[in-house]
Image 1: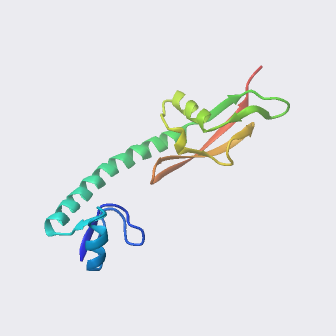
Image 2: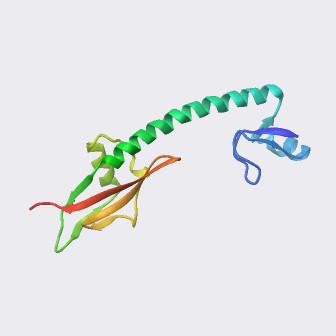
Image 3: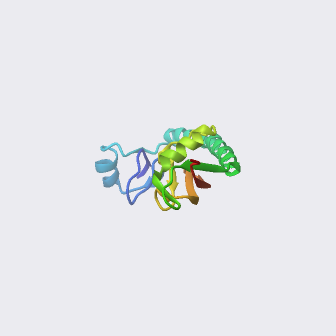
Length: 150
């Protein structure tokens, strides 16, 4: 029995895959639970059209993410923080601070898509963060934490 999956099914396939399963599995489990639909000729045509439109939209999104990635690579970020003795910070620099600094530069990026390597920053110096703009576009973003002038 040939079916089109409506949702991801573990050990079978992902959403919008066309799969072959045994008749009982399809009729008794997948279709009644809303996990799949019959793969008729018309359903396959609709699926192909939807996948084509989704690929077109996805391409635009990826192109925009790559443009933002190029702008971020050209950016040199310095974050100022209060320091105590030596190079130790009062508090820490986190993804929230990095997102706020990027916002000031005109790049609106949610803090949950920023990952500072090593967690939060507790000392001055150069650091690296990964910014995920799209599931296919991840940017390594170097930044530096400097002491606030007293």
